[in-house]
Image 1 (spheres, one colour):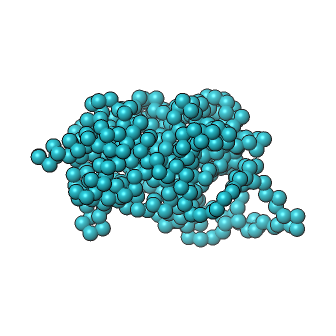
Image 2 (cartoon, rainbow, N blue to C red):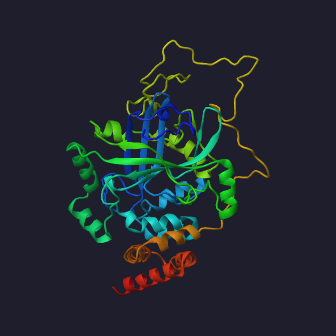
Image 3 (cartoon, helix red, strand yellow):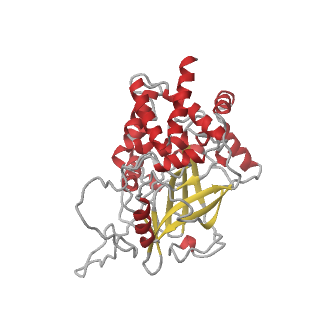
Length: 420
């Protein structure tokens, strides 16, 4: 901890400047399998577990500040199109761009991933982001909305598409090797941790002014509207002793938070809160939270018993909690978090801001230097050329709406690919 944020949260890991909390971090691919080349174009998972005195807090994010989608019902399909075709077992540009072109909310993330940010120069040189809007609750029960940022202190470095392809053949474990060697020689990678903060009044005013939904994970909050507030420094100073036991069996979940933290009405986050734990039951096992890498490092009290691979058994302790006639007197959403005011008709899909898929993608495009724009055009064209003409035209229409120069640049690059 390097800065006091206790006015925003009562979470004990943030209780004083200078406080240290043990962490476990995993930087991963999204579309790649185990053994795929580290330098393949991809988004990267950026997950950090904090072993706090109140339980585990898992920050399960990405190396980009925005996500592909905003609706959890699309999450399985989004994952599938980044994997392999069920018939050919090959990566499929047709699948990928069919999904992207029919789901224009992906445009902001697509622009980032097909820029040079999609091929980072090792794990030490990429940033991390919580992506979603979360909440913090202070001792008075006051809530603010936050976004988490992890800015690499090593400096952001990326590879060109040509460099990434060369390294993929020469050293497919490039990023892993770089991380292990840096830590072994004592050159510990670090990230500056910060938050953006909006009060409820700020959020309402910001949404009214911009027309954007503050809980939409395909958007970012501009720094001019919500400056970053320093929190601390993340340092990775050792590698696991056994890769399978710790890395492969690590079971992160956005549902793992501590008192003083909360969620938000972000629909994708609400889905992930349930989906990750459900997945771990199958991927690792019923009692995956008993494994050392997943176990909290503080006393645990619950009524869970038995099941496959039970490691921690509370013994003779009661496996129920009585509720007397006075009730439990719950407060808000738990741990003193205030409830959320609701009004209007309830439905599965909240469409606030759903029609603006293009403004922030256009801003990102125009921020790129001229040479980076050319790289973006070339990277997209190489992939998009593998999709049917109808899909290409549908996707080009989205680029046009973000910025006419964006669509024109990709069209020119596609024409060059067609002549090769």
